[in-house]
Length: 174
Image 1 (tube, rainbow, N blue to C red):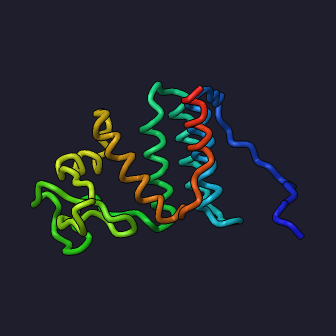
Image 2: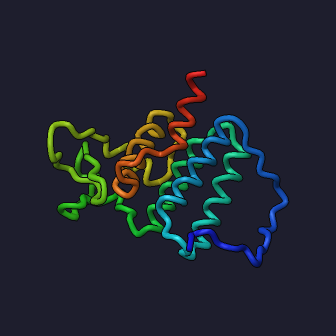
């Protein structure tokens, strides 16, 4: 009569590291949980996605920077959902992006070299190539990656806002 399930068997993941998330890292963990809960179908088997989830939590625990772990998990989630896009080729023409200076991101489609309208954010192809190689040491590029991942996920999240983002914003105001 409900979606509540009974856990009958639990096999613990062997890990020697304790995952201690506090402050922003804890809210980031809430965010990852909410993405999984909202986007992965109920009862779907996704062992590789949960390995990525554990890896993201470990990376957040071990690093001062949370953003790279979040962005990497978002990309892995898109891949799991079959919604990954190509970082190297124009989604409209199939031409290599490196032949252009600028490109634009179309959610649920990919990068294109011709803007759909004048409101689209332009991305330097050089930055996109560095992001494709997971070069996220530069804060500006990391911010661009955040915009891209946010746009890519929005298609699947719909209009309902993420509660974890609201919770995080609420703590920043206090």
